Length: 250
Image (cartoon, rainbow, N blue to C red; front, side):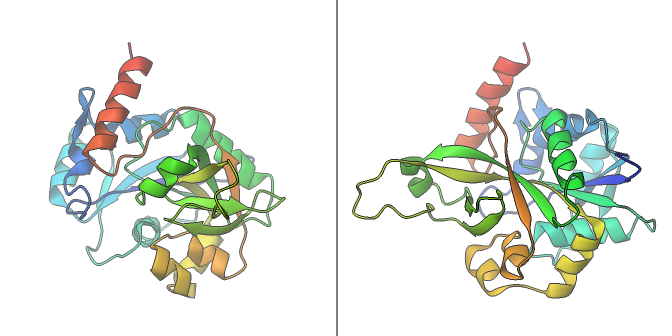
């Protein structure tokens, strides 16, 4: 709880993704990836409850063994945020803040989750807060698994894309790209609104949840995470995440 506001974190995860089918339960430095995520969220000083939301019995069984509370959800969701919404509604209680903390972010600490929550609470006009990091333009062009974002002078998102953003015109500029980290606290009312709005045109093209907010003129505040983090979308990412975790956990 923060300033009297209750906080629910939902970690959406599923097997069978086309990029890396079994990634939620892959072992990284001795633990399942989902366990790293769950333990990091557990370090938060504001979180009241943590749920892992999944359509897969294998995830239920594995995560229950290490103490996580897991809920079975529909296997028809096209967006992680919609899976988060189902789990949130099934709690049958009122929440002020709901966090979509993606299950492929094993290196984002509870401290950075708390900073994102604090940013949301600081401005009631926001719908959501989303962490980001920096990536070289060359890597951003190569890696379409990573979602890039451009922001305005208030640090609110203007557009998300799997292509490098912004474009280099005539190749005469040198800059880095902002890359989304999928840790997204939002007001519960904004989550309700997300579902009511339905899929957006650019959301469908880019396959990025946050575009639904942006397309409808709602504010998504981008907050830079200065830790070295790595989302896991493929085997190479998993190997890089393992190296980072080995350095962190001696």
